Image (cartoon, helix red, strand yellow):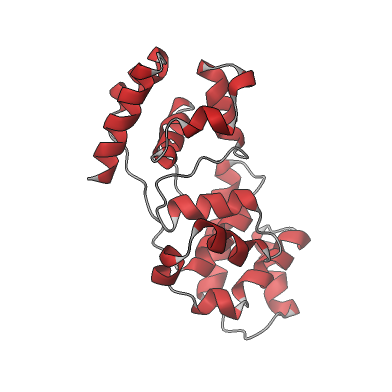
Length: 203
């Protein structure tokens, strides 16, 4: 199984590089699985938008209210009544704008997970980056937690940077450093987040 191969590979690679703290951490935690989102793609992206720049607790509360609105949404286009509901749920004007750009996007509504999985990383990026509110970090999180790409390391993620600083030097926080852990860099993300005691990271 991929997650067991990833665990063994990352552990052995850490020992090989003499990263003993990391190796011990990986061994102690054991194999980790990537928990794929079970949402449709529109809801998945909407949850990412809602959670941006918020604490985990605040994001969860606002998403719970927003998700209920989306479940009951019968509108065909952007309208003030729906926007008012989003505002009452705790969303800012900017996030409401981004959310509308996602939930009424016909390309997003109609694309299947199978199609998304068959896109190359570059095609996936090009498909999403044109959508307002979706940036490189959001795309990387979707690559990991929606299509299950095993080899993504998000250098834009503040949590990963903070985890790196717990055991390494800021001077080696770069792509070449983590290239050593390819083809299982997404799993490395899981282990790095676990260093911060984020036991159940999922997008």
